[in-house]
Amino acid sequence: MLDRYTHPEMGKLWQDGYEYERWLEVELAVAEVMTARGEIPQEAMEEIRRSAKVNPKRVLEIEKIVRHDLIAFLQAVVEEIGEAGKYLHLGLTSSDVKDTALSLVLRDSGHLLKRDLRALREALVKRAVESKYTVMVGRTHGIHAEPLTFGLKLALWIAELDRQEERLDQAISSVSVGKISGAVGTYANVSPEVEEAVCNYLGLTTALVSNQILQRDRHAHFMTTLALIGGSLEKIATEIRNLQRTDILEVEEPFAKGQKGSSAMPHKRNPIVCEQVSGMSRLLRGNALAAMENIALWHERDMTHSSVERIILPDSCLLLDHMLRQMTRIISGLTIREEQMKRNLQKTYGLTSSQRVLLALVEHGCMREEAYAWVQQDAFQAWEQGQDFIEVVSADPRITNYLSQEDFKGLFDLSYHLQHVDDIYKRMGLE
Image (tube, rainbow, N blue to C red):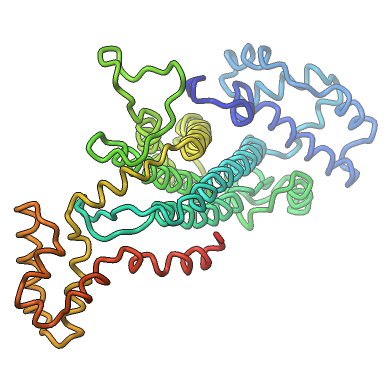
């Protein structure tokens, strides 16, 4: 992952050599449990506690020879400990240590992402309350539909993020699992009691059954959840990008003092951060697909997942952390152009009230098919000739046979479309 997209807290979890400290954490947890069970002498454990540390440089030197990262790690740690080091890794296989340690990193990464998600939600709630009655036109298929408020648009995003948080909680739970069950999961050399005690010590749950590794559906669950969250962020970013287009210009992402949008055109203020978020979401989806490919392994384990995970797991956690932080900054600093929203709403000459006219005709006894045809004809006339829709329909004798001039005034009142905004906000707890 490029440094420019890495923030300190998440970066610390995945920095070069991150796995060594977590491997040591697992090895020491196993040793502590075995000592409590009388399987390792107390004096040996005291020496292990006192001397155990990791020298990443030494690990890499050894790995060049043995070509096995966990063996290199163990040899380097034992060199620091001395004689008592023989009690480390008793009855374990490499994946007991590596997979359990990886679960610790993924769990902690997930909690950071959850905090990021909540920060974004808070920013959205603040702007949603501010924009509760900020009227704008709704668009379906890119075409003016009926009025809504910008606050309702934000409320929609908030509800989606709440669902994503539920999914993230489930994914964190799914991956917060350890295994200390040996080479093929039979506990031939380490008992299930040791495994359970170690997992409790580390704050993990125990896999009900495993083979040499934790099953990769767990990691795929985590990764697909990150991709889903990325998809929601892309959805938000795409909407902001569209609304920032010059011919719409209802919102703008923050533009810092001294920032420049184009090397050629000084006037440009491009939605580059939203574009960055949209692009990164593609990486998350690709990584999620790779994680799903890792589920099917040969027999009790093969190595095809390992090299993939070295890339996709840190990259995805770092990417989503960056995306969430960026989107929080965008929402917090978003320029909302209320007057432009009003002007855009008026561009279609009141056509956004066409359904109200249709329903009023039906309520006054007109057949729906006939009413639809009349309203559509008048709407097209207003659009083609640049006339106010209310003037066209109120002059149509077919329609005035059913509706009075007083009826028309109420049919074009925008407040009709906003009568349930409070109900939606109350339902979501956004009052």
